[in-house]
Amino acid sequence: MGCPTVAPVMGNDRAARAGAVAAAGWLALMIVMTLLLPRGVTPDTLLVLAPIVACAVCSVRVTGAFALASVALTGWSGWLHGSWDTGQQWVGLATVVAVGAAAVVVAEVRIRREIKFARVARIAEVAQRAVLPVVPRVDGLDVATRYLSASEDSFVGGDLYDCSLTEGYTRFIVGDVRGKGIAAVEQAARVIRAFRQAAATKETLSEVVDDMDEYLRSFFDDEEFVTAVIVDVSTPGQLVIANCGHPPALLLRADGTAQLVEVTPGLPLGLGDGVVPTPFAWEVGDRLLLYTDGLAEARNKAGEFFPVLEHADVLRAGSPEDALDALLAQVRRFVPGGHLGDDLAALLLEKVSPETRPLGGTGALASVRYDVTPSGSAV
Image (cartoon, rainbow, N blue to C red; front, side):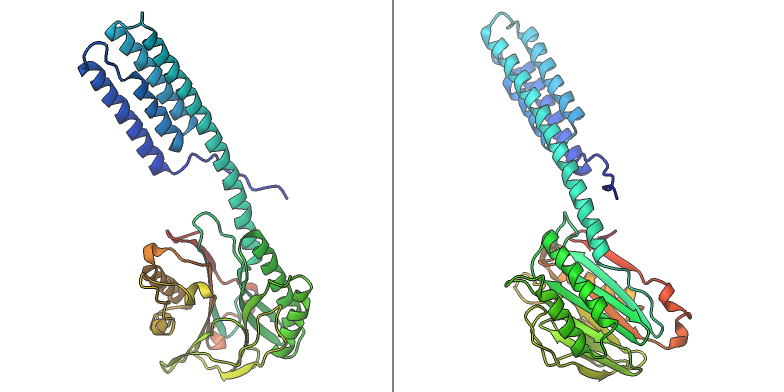
């Protein structure tokens, strides 16, 4: 498969416009100064600031235009003051020409790097989307997922979620691989592979965790591990949770109560030696939020952690899709400038009556949304 095509990058449009306005304003100021200053006093060499400003944010063509304008104004200034018979004028012209040419080269190099970065970022985005699957619809469940990157420039991270839907077993996982970047995405893919292999065949969550841990240890080094919460909703009326060193799930009851699910914690996958799953009642109208530490460890200006339990009411309103959007909006308002300190993956389940889901729900796909802070624009 070929690399994704990447459109030419000309930088941020707003910054480019601001740079062009600043450069044009500077040239206008130099014209006024040339007209007002006494004969023999010329600001010609200051004209080079226009292409220098332009090359930082504008296209090669715009930078070249300002460089040519600077050269032309230098020639005009020499004619106006009758200074072409002096060495100073020629030195000034040579300086403007040299700096203008250098600015064009800098703009070209900058654009090439932006194009290269955009291509790499696009490949990374495709890799992240390949790792994070579209969660299928499940009869008796309403499912919503979100992934937010803490980086404004990339979608890559080690947070993950998945669903294993096979005959007899319906299981979910949310996890967080230690580390960042492409290496974390590679390990996240392995975690999802291990989950799918184990969740589809093992009878209990203890066996699922043991199988995953054994598989992952052959790929992890001594400092690599993944925290995870694994949920089994295969049995009607029952929810089983296994926690491998991960932030606790938030369980919202249909009667209006809410609790952070405290279960016997196990060690993270890759370090663990077993886990004790805990069963809970699971009735129509109940909701369960699984999330990574990008949510639990989000901090405000005072250094306080985001109080997940205190925002339980936000997760009750509307559909799971609407509820997750509302929760993430609260997180952005909580952290300074809307910037997350870590990637965030979240999965919200709601127990619904089977008849509210169309038959053959495994063929329909739940939506998935990727956001990048601080803008949080959907992709």
